[in-house]
Amino acid sequence: MKIPRAIQQVVESFERLPGIGPKTAERLTFYLLHVPQGELDRFAESVKNLRIGTITCSICFNVGESDPCSLCQDQTRNHSLICVVEQPLDVIALEKSKKYPGVYHVLNGKIDPLNNIGPDEIRISELLRRVRNSESNSKEIVLATNPTMEGEATAMYIAKQLKSQNAHLKISRIGRGLPIGADIEYADPTTLERAMEGRSDY
Image (cartoon, rainbow, N blue to C red; front, top):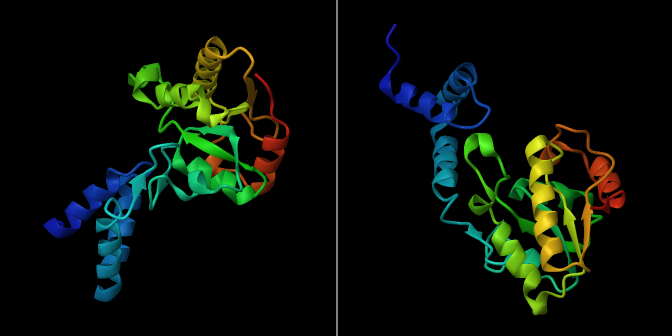
């Protein structure tokens, strides 16, 4: 049986998404095939406006609707406390815990030599420049990269660079509550709260 080209194109588009295999791509496509046209149009419009309706913050590199983002503009937050995360999804996860009072810095990746991603491919130099800026008055950097081999390597590299830049800067690592191999975006708020409260000096 020959699959209609329109269906095949949608299946192939879904397959390009992370974590979506051929079977899941087919199920999603055939689900959309039976959705009312109006709902399908709204879905297509949302996807179309995804890039148009968002902007990357020039301070923390999180995704928002303005530059600077709402978190960087919030004067009630502790701007001397910077939490370094791998992805914008990690910011969302940490914000759900409602226990972190500081601001963020999103690396948009991690050091991963096997995939040819080095320090220059992620936002490490921007973090160093941000901390170096006297206006930021940074007192503590919380390294909240994922507790994976790559996340640990990224945290170690950043800590070394920060210490060489400012020996008196407090550098801590997100602590208990997150098992090795887990991603921050999938952790529940209680686990994240414990991890943030149990951070240790790096």
